[in-house]
Image 1: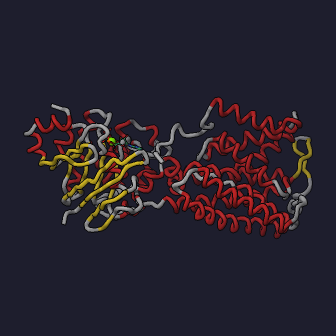
Image 2: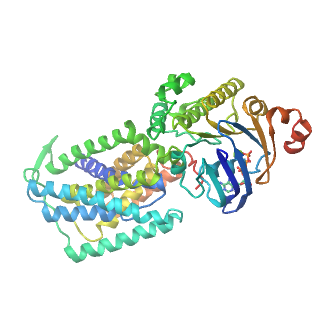
Image 3: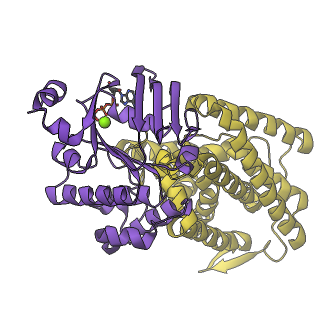
Length: 287
Length: 234
Ligand SMILES: Nc1ncnc2c1ncn2[C@@H]1O[C@H](COP(=O)(O)OP(=O)(O)OP(=O)(O)O)[C@@H](O)[C@H]1O
Ligand SMILES: [Mg+2]
């Protein structure tokens, strides 16, 4: 039980790091980035390639951060010409990118699942209140909590965060102050993608790296976004922690029905709060 | 050459054209009261001038610079500020953050966070509150502050008195008068004739996507028949 709760936290914080960028970009610009899972998988393969030593692990994190930033900015640019088109057109474009990236990763790394080792000294187990628990996951909970807090504070407490919140609330009014919406979008896209790729490296020792993982985590992230409410950092955090617990508990208690439990939670939230737990009451913008 | 020259302006939405070749000239420093019945296209004109509704054809020249076809952020940097119908403050952003964001791309000039708070002291008391927690009047003040902090040359106000108590409407009148004293040009869309007559140099009336009448405020007030015919009011 304790182990399951801890696992839930580890996965919850990981999910938050993954989902927060997806949520803000969608809430802000109506762009649903279906390539978000591919960024995570790219990070996981970086982990599989370099991890094993501390230097390798940190190098993987650094590469994931830089690569994520660049990929996010590129995705933002690519979706720009479709700005006046429907959500579906933009989502289809990012889905196409996701397929291409997934194929390239298979060409580069093959079909077989790769394992990612935790950095040395964290690959063992420690005892937590009498239960043995992987040391890496415990550290992941700490790192995830710190990252989540940092993202939360930046968005909720800083000037840059105010610009992000304002753009989520009503981007046209931001433009009337002389601020170019496209720059805000590119910046959020880039940082969100950085976080997704980094989450891939951090999650490597838990999930490994394998074809199909991108779709699995994308769906989890989408569930988090829908449960938390579009564009809300607080919502993404609560949604991720809830889904982390639901998913791990579901696997322990009802292994055959694990994914059913996940979607039951989703359905329940949508029935009670159609805009998600922290969704805005209504979008003001007319377009 | 006028300060603002709008000619042959056509714009609207997917569902249909709203402005059918609208012409409007405005001198620098003037306050124009823009009246018209519901749905004649007043807000569409304001939003088109701000770049938020695309121009189909025609031109909008500000000091001989063409604004038609420019993005809203470019138009803002050219000196046009908007106080939209419905206020549209950001509910999840605090008053202090509104002020900071609004002055971030300021063109420089009279209006600073301090001078705006002197003009609208209520906002100073509410600095730490989220805009979603403010009263309607306070939100309107915040929307006005947001526009002023860009240090605009032209301010577009769309029904700022809508749904507000008389004391707050008086305060808005005071702010418009202050803007005028600072040399800012103002287009004020209003249903509240008392407010419009109190602050405008000239009154223009819109009907079905075009300007159909224009007169100095004093002359318009002496002509209740025209007002009644165009607006359906006494
Ligand atoms: N976002 C929109 N999308 C589609 N049609 C719109 C939109 N906004 C306004 N319209 C239509 O355009 C026409 C003009 O509307 P507009 O809001 O410009 O009028 P208005 O003079 O400002 O009215 P009011 O006094 O009620 O504010 C109306 O027929 C309206 O239904
Ligand atoms: Mg209107």
